[in-house]
Amino acid sequence: QVQLVESGGGSVQAGTSLRLSCAASGRTFSMYAMGWFRQAPGKEREFVAGISGTGSRIYYADSVKGRFTISRENAKNTVYLQMNSLKPEDTAVYYCAARIAIGVSTRKSGYDYWGQGAPVTVSA
Image (cartoon, rainbow, N blue to C red; front, side, top):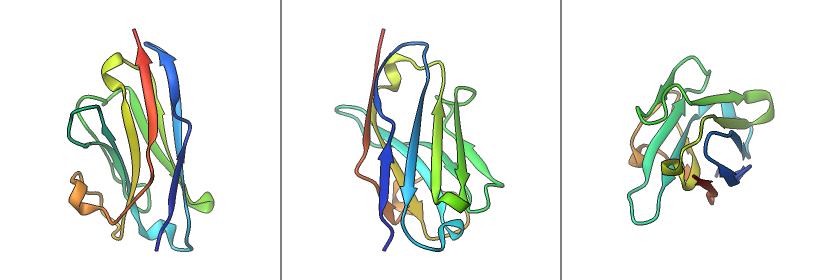
């Protein structure tokens, strides 16, 4: 079992930045690909960013490319999502997810464990 705990959500103004963190339990964190997803009210949960176990492969949704950065510190069992130039359309609950595989998946079904979610609200 892997437990994931997100932190760092909040309410901010458009154009500002926020960093989400996700702490994972377990001793084999480097063997998990990690992903960030988000779900806005009334919408499907969507892929935001993913990073392989070693950090060598990174993928972003087109909507966040150039503004968001995913990174990980395997020594701390933590993955981050740095969100810059936030827009009101980035408002959502952000979920951290772990995949028992080295490679990244952009699909919800590709992940085995999920955090409880961190709400992010961006006002104009």
